[in-house]
Image (tube, rainbow, N blue to C red; front, side):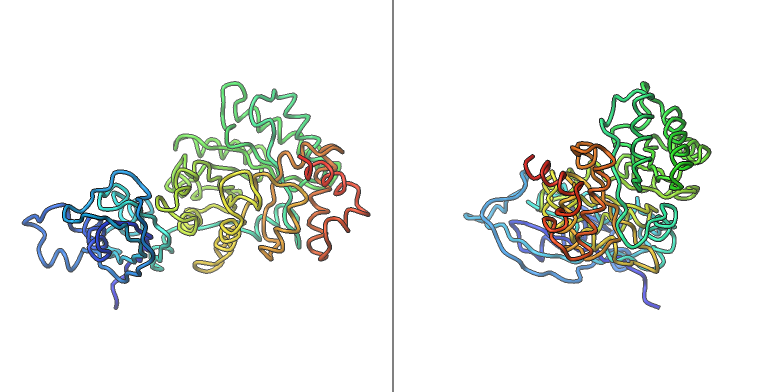
Length: 420
């Protein structure tokens, strides 16, 4: 039986030959160090050493992407070579553990002075690793079942202002949103369990309003409460939500770590909405950090059911091509039915639906609009309706302009947000 191994693919930049740089990577992250040591026997190297699977040469540049690189001493004129490197790591070096996997495939590599750029762009994990983790409990189908929404995207919003609302102000806002027919609401990542508005008090206020609205409309809005906190708080916060009748929790993945998400997944009774705040620090430089393809695999294994991807024409640095690829990654199975619902957000409004659908060709998304709903000139209910109308236009193959001729809420949104 072939020994299980993990394949890690990197994009690198270095002033050294690519094969030398790849060997430095393999040694640093397995049996080697900066100098030979007596205990590094041939057996140790063969059994526990990382190996180079493939090196693909790309382009070269004259200026390094990152500072701190050590230049070769024997070169009068330095060229920074770029390439794609695939390394193979023995699975028995770390076992079924995301934290220890990361120490291997994304540990000290970023600090090596032989590199002016290094980025983890893909991971291929053995089935024995994947089977250790629970993965999404609800995913797309479970979320749709709880929300009662099929054959179109879920339409949602973020409570705004993000912080500072009193309990009475929060109640009024949630009441209006729930009565509007919106599918989903969430706390902002800035608002978890602050002293001015403790989570327990917010959960009570929000759920009372959601239940009252459900009595009138027959629709219980899904609300993702931000339960991010220290490890010993996750269960308490989760239980507070569930005991109040809540149907979703949100966690900042990078704040609690993949291990924290995995811990939450072990006892979670409702979908886990995965927020990726701080992600920009991990990915914005194209020659540092990691690709979303890697990140979403680990987040899915840990157990999130929804995962933020940004939206098209967003207010952040990410390109539309990157957003589309991120959505596709979330919807690509790893092992069985383990896809998660991509969450489109940032600068979204009704008018982004047509272009979004044309680009992603799926309705299995949660489309969040903060200002695109809250700032609609016709009010919140009109903002929610405009989002649905934008998607109706997309699914019917109509232009926004044509559909807006008979749908006033969409027309108002276009008048407002195309001029903003």
